[in-house]
Image (tube, rainbow, N blue to C red):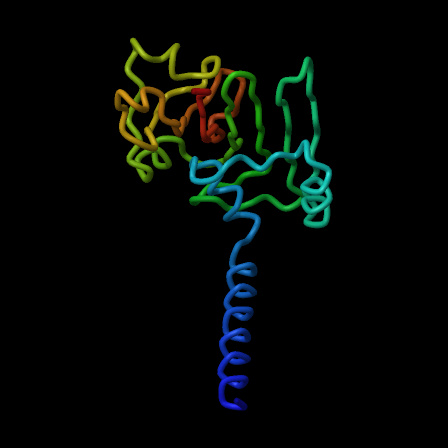
Length: 175
């Protein structure tokens, strides 16, 4: 009986240590990176608990919502380093679909190449861009009959940014 109790205790301790290690390795950078690359849902700053947790890490959330649309800005006191870029702001906008994207500093072409992104063909530029920012894209899953609109990672810039700034992030479509 004592042996069984000791084994159970060690097993429980082992799992709790694993959970703690997993939690500590899950940095804010990795959470935002995963959302920017369409691997997890966007971080939703409309939730008061999320805002409180982000505030504790010196991240300010501005909710610019109008007419029930998602329109959030995340501002970082200390910029994040994501995929060899510096990110000081992330935006989350949506209506019937959403775009969760970072404003990054770095070289857009080097970044796109590191992701194996493809230039957006001229005939798809309007359909695959929010405004005029799309220059490169990468589907997160194959386009199929069952999934005609998979999420897309868009990389681009618009005419109002500095030459070393660009946008990248996840565009999701409502099914």
